[in-house]
Amino acid sequence: MNDRMTTPWGEVALTRHPEDPRDRLRAWDASDAYLLRHLAGQRVPLPGTVVVLGDRWGALVTALAAHRPTQITDSWLGQEATRRNLARNGVEPGSVRLLTTQDPPPERVDVLLVRVPKSLALLEDQLLRLAPSVHAGTVVVGTGMVKEIHTSTLRLFERILGPTRTSLAEQKARLILCAPDPARARPANPWPYRYDLPAGLGPLSGRPVVNHAGVFCADRLDIGTRFLLRHLPSTRGSAEWSTWGVATVWWGRRWRWPTRGPRCCSRTSRSRRWPRRRRRTGPTGCRARGSSGSGTGSRGCRTTAWTSC
Image (cartoon, rainbow, N blue to C red; front, side, top):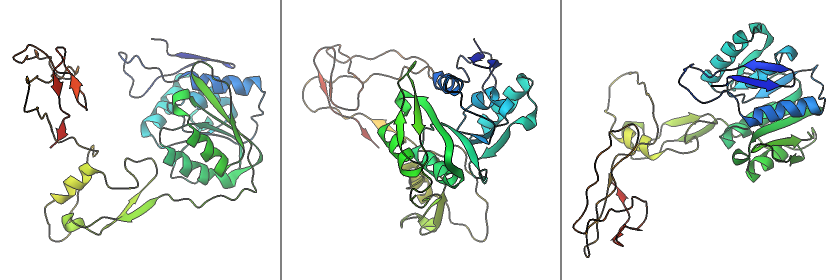
């Protein structure tokens, strides 16, 4: 696998963390390379404070390590990958300042490079945190793949920082070019988001919840956690609870068949994580198409939609 990224300042060796020789995914993509080419082509001055927001595997700060940038990320794996990539390229650890999204941002930002995150809430929180440090001369450039940049992303940049436009796409990547306006009125930061748990959750009903931007279901209680909280045992006195891998849970799935006509059998799982099982056929020998809606089998049989239980 090619683990070297070519930049206007030379090649850098990059890897993800944890490093796996079988991993075929690179530690950078076309949007990272596009941003670096733009900085070199436009001869953007980099002597001041350079802040890189959302650098996923340290590709940007490793390439710009000579300018002593500051990286802000919410990913522990991303920071570990950055440390290893800096060491791999012979860069001193103190050349790059590593911050989390909860740390105070730099007081002044001269160049702001934004790798658009998957969470729009996280982008809103970070832009509102960095907005007081941005001045009229700050160069603000965002980058991401075309499928990651939406109209809501551009509106967020324009609402918080200033007039925003996009570049032409190259290799399915696009740039966001923003001209900061310090006089623009900015909304209050809604993060972290606080709310009280609804009734019907047993001993935790009415308890306050605080969620930071970027976490799963930050503005509401997801159905899996709601189900879990209803079945927590009541305790006396103080107790410690720990959660691992909490997310929305699919508790089961069943198929409901029509009362008339031939009965078709559903398609079994063909995931790589589970052994392949032989399909069963109905009386007519047809196989149903597994879908979330009603579908037609190979012999024209109709099946009804599945329901969760």
